[in-house]
Image (tube, rainbow, N blue to C red; front, side, top):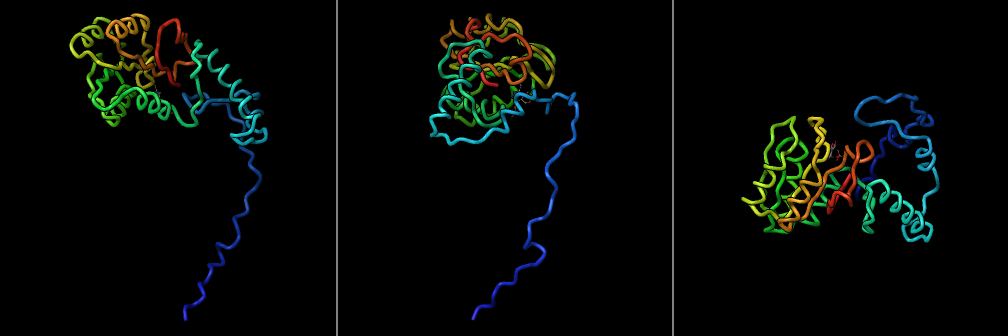
Length: 208
Ligand SMILES: Cc1ncc(COP(=O)(O)O)c(C=O)c1O
């Protein structure tokens, strides 16, 4: 006969903790950052299921606001529940197929992350170089295109690891499109902070 399992009395009751009351701090670092009270209020509203008609209406509004923020008319402007890396993976996983060539920059940490994701998607990765702390030079991008004929070009608009903003974005997208390549822009730390015009600058996929 098996013995009745003994329950440890110390884990029978859930620990008693007070109501959550975090202190009111002013956050001055690169993240986490302060959230507008209107956003905090929205986050305390009731949940609705993803099949609820109210959810569809809310999603339509969110898409409209995202299109406004990204400066695009693209109907496939969607929120992804996840981190910036999740959206990077969504972009690269959807554009890079096994055997495709992706051109990525070497001038910072997040260009390196693009590289790992493209490799995991089965892509052949080629690079355009610039020293850490410098943006990409369009002349080097053109040269890399002539040499490798990549299918996809990824660049980091604001390379957080060095603080460098990539200027000349329309010049880079012109080069890519003249070579029939798609352009992916990492705008994780540029969206809402500096000018980003997805449609005017002819960016095919932007994530943040
Ligand atoms: C430029 C850039 N790309 C991608 C990421 C990844 O975002 P997350 O840390 O939310 O996954 C970061 C995060 O700091 C970033 O600064």
